[in-house]
Every structure is written in structure tokens, then in C-alpha cells.
Length: 75
Image (cartoon, rainbow, N blue to C red; front, side):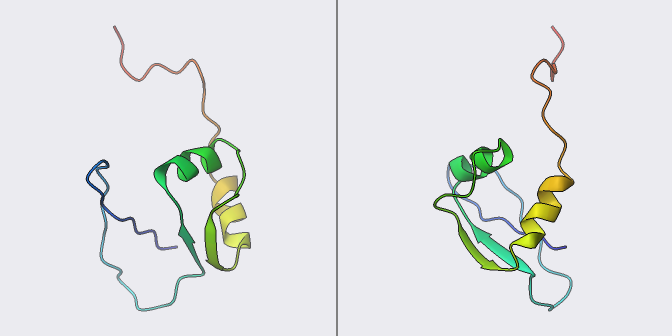
């Protein structure tokens, strides 16, 4: 699996150059808000897919559900 992101002035993202020249199984084009909604279970409305959409199901199945009370920083 290969993941790449795009930088924008409002987001700090890291993009690594691909190690292989294989074609991606799925390319997803979406905004940050759409990504957060997707991870939160809001669905895929307005998101552009190119490739095998079953790959998204695999990735989401490997993603942990967020814990609402999890403290990132302790007071």
C-alpha cells in the first residue's frame, strides 16, 4: 500500500516519494474536511475515486475507532 498527500498552506502534511513504479490500487481525491468526515463515518459523498473502492474498505477496517475521552495531553 502506498499513501501520498499534498501540502497546502493550512495543513502540515508529509509526502514521501514512491519506492516503486506500480500503479496505485485506488486514488482518492478529497478535502481535509471530507477526510475527517470519512474517518468519522460520514460517508463518501463528494469524494472522487479512481480504482478499486474495496481498497478503501480494507483501509477503514484497519483503522481504530476513536475513543472520545482519550487525553492526548495530561494536565
